[in-house]
Length: 180
Image (cartoon, rainbow, N blue to C red; front, side):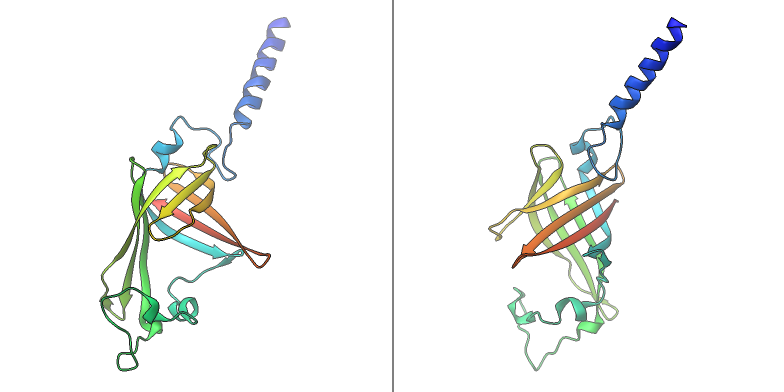
C-alpha cells in the first residue's frame, strides 16, 4: 500500500510541475527546444485580426482608403495623371524572417492586377523580453520598439498579439504565422 501511495504522489507531483510549465496561452505546454530555436526561421502570415474581426489583407481599398499614397517613399511619384486603383492590388504574402543573430526582415509581396510588383522588405532587429513572453521588434526609422505578446510558439506556429492605445481606446491586433 505504501508503494502505491508513493507512485500516486509522484504522478501528482509530475502532473502539477508539467501543467505549470505552459509559458504561452496557446502552447506548447511542454517542449525541449528553447524559445530562440523555435522562433528562428521564416514565418508566413496566415491570419490577421483587428479587435477580434478578421482583416482581409487583400482589400487594399479598405486598408488604405484614408492613406495618401504620395506619402510613401517610392521612386515613382503618384499623381492624378497616374492613378492607382487600390481594388487591383492584392497582397500575395507577408513574411517575417527572424535570424539567429537577432536581425531579420519583414517583407511584403504585392500583385497589381495580374502583374507581380517588386517585394518590399524592411530590415529589423528582434529580441525577447526578459521573461521571453514578448517579441520586441525594432524597425529602422521608427522611434518606438514594437512589442508583441507571444500567444503561441511552436516549431510550426507563431501567434502574436499587439495592443495599441490611442486616446484611451485600446485596439488589439492578432497575427498568426506558420513556419515555411
